[in-house]
Length: 72
Image (cartoon, rainbow, N blue to C red; front, side, top):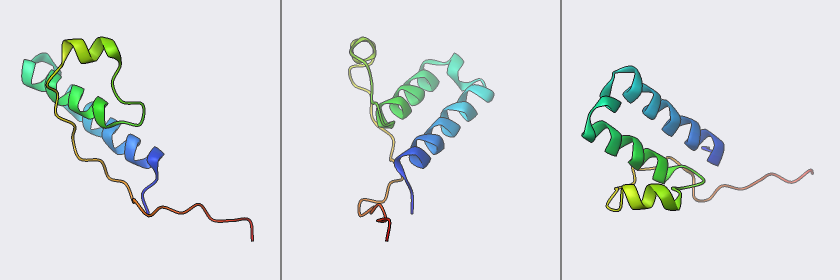
């Protein structure tokens, strides 16, 4: 089962790898990072929407039928 927090962590790791590989120094790399940010839990801010109006979200690993177990 993939939780929201785990899905955000996996997206963060993708962005980290782009930066580690110095892809953030290119326009295409910045667009990839913006796409990752859009897919994360809090989404993208109004300021970034202006800078990246056509950003494409990356797929997010999340279990749609996630259920929080009860105490019993």
